[in-house]
Length: 445
Ligand code: PFF
Image (spheres, rainbow, N blue to C red):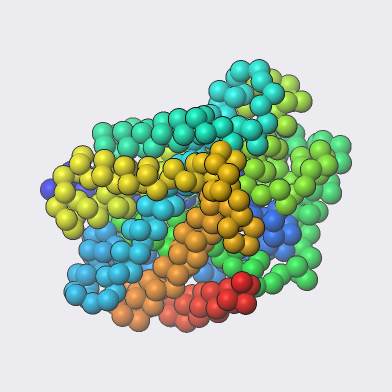
């Protein structure tokens, strides 16, 4: 993170924050999770609900986290306990930290596959995705390597360097995705994919589609666990939080939508099933590269860029519990990183082995979900939504939307006009909508 341990420090500039927050937001959630969840939930209708969730709930809620962080200048637990010392609200911050640990535990497993695919692209082989992820040694090594990479970056405090790289590499990812969109949409038979993805059939919308869309919006924007409270705490008071938030949300949403514009046309051109689940991207992208001119080269570059996008997200996930141990428990930063890293590693082993490597972990546990998918559902979906429900109440009612709005107007005086609208969204729309969607869940099971 920016700054030293004794001085909390700040991002070097407004752009520094935007890139770090976009680096956290843009990751596997956009390119791996978004297309497969879209495929499972029927396509365009899901995309429509997802966009609505980003606009009406995700963005206003992002401002709540940023305002809290910049006003109090602390991690989520510290920020809440400064405002309401010794209250039960502190547990909300605690939930965020636990959620971060669990999300990282399976996220790094998938990031490990991505990393492994760089080499799989280079070496001629017939290894299918199914056999790749079912190999216990392979997945364990890849998971360990990716965790170690994350730990070393956070340990060495070289995020500055990573940020610099991300500034160069993320625009390259953007250009590569555009080229792939063009290629994929020129494949014969691709237009059916485009209409699956963009022509909504509203009768497909139901409670579980809405829950999936809301969860995806939180996951993709890195919301619901206080990460943006932590990142917001490093923003300068003179920066414009409103426009920064819009840039982050726009970049994140654009990358997700672009990923779908590649996957679905190609998928239908190849007559594959859109509802294939978490393996979708790992099957479809290599199949695209296989028939493409310079396909190996493009494939290697693609998986390198995706690994780096994942790394800027794993760094942010590791940062939240680490900042908590440093700020609140006085643990030295370098020790804290290792403590958190080792806990996450242990938590992640069952996920790593749940894709065929170990039989009982790979069997469906509930609603057809094996261990990793269950982790993703509980932590990446439910827990983020629940955390956002509680935090929107905290900011809207306990701390007070007025105080938060004052913070948001700093650096953007024009916000004063919008403050009542935002206040309404954060006090009523966010918590009530999330509550209803979560209630619906009981019906689903
Ligand atoms: N937003 C990241 C992605 O879409 O890949 C994942 C993530 C990072 C979720 C950080 C939550 C978080 F706090």
